[in-house]
Amino acid sequence: MSDIILFSGIYLFGVIISAFSQVLLKKSADVKTTSFLKQYLNIKVISAYTIFFIASFLSVYAYKVIPVTLGAILGTLEYGLVAILSYVFFKEKLTKKQILGILLIIAGIIVYSIKF
Image (cartoon, rainbow, N blue to C red; front, side, top):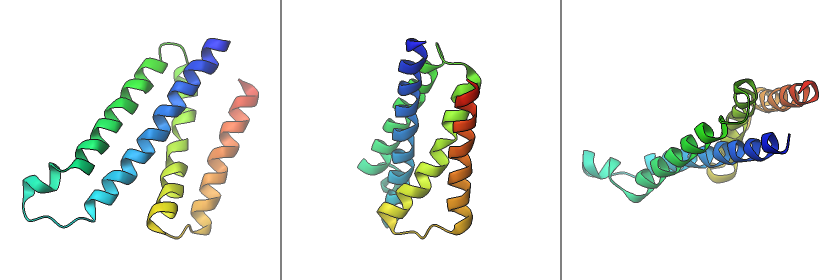
């Protein structure tokens, strides 16, 4: 059981850094460039894809122990994290539907955890 908790933590860490990489990609899209290459070969884009690669690796590694159903449930947290990080970094407004969606995701994870 402790292995599942450890590997679930690894998986969640991957989800969190994946959300950060998406926000970093969005941040890099705001930068105006003069050429196609500069648009994709800048430090923000390269860092975001590197972080995303690490997050993907962590997810695959965690699947050695955690059940696929648990990984899929924990992976849904990313949707809420991206919305929250966009609010924090870009001052994007969270609509009532988005907040309700985040709460439903969290409620679903809690219900699944009680069953698990």
